[in-house]
Image 1 (cartoon, rainbow, N blue to C red):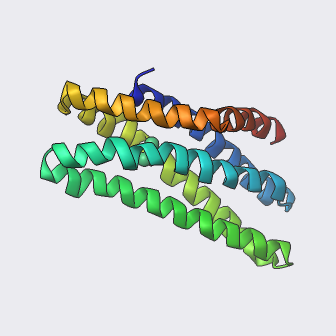
Image 2 (cartoon, helix red, strand yellow):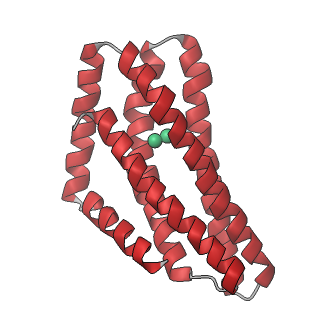
Amino acid sequence: MEAIDLLIKEHDNIKRVLAVARKLCLKILEEGEVDFEVFEKIIDFVKNYADDHHHGKEEDILFERMSDELDKDVKEITISAMFSEHDFGRYFISKLETALKEVKSGDEEAKIDIIANAVGYADLLDGHIFKENNMVYNYGKENLSSDTLQEIGVSCKEVEEKAAQEGIQDKYIKMIDDLEQRV
Ligand SMILES: [Fe+2]
Ligand SMILES: [Fe+2]
């Protein structure tokens, strides 16, 4: 599979987990209960699959090459916006982790911070994915040279192979099925 097609496929996987996160939040509203175990799995998925594995390939390979080779505005406006959305996502997740700890130690009010940060993250990533799928990736595909696209393919393949040796893709794809069954 071509590197950009694989990134789009990964977006589908990430979106399935965003839907689980929203359902878990609805459960808090309806039942008042926080499913800590499922939230912790979502955080594991977000950090290691969505961020390390997926955003890693964007930041270190695709966006890096787009910044180097394409129009200066692409780097300064479009790519830097994608990087800052990745950072906002990390902020939401760190606030979510804090809120989970607070609720665990008896702070009922922090339930609203769980909902705010989990839903905030899901909305942010949903919009981010839409921009990448419909604009940013296409711009890269249409404007990078065929040599560069080939090099991006080789670099992404190396990342995929290393991750496969560590069982990353298997672990997190299985986790999505499990998460969907639990909400
Ligand atoms: Fe991204
Ligand atoms: Fe992405």
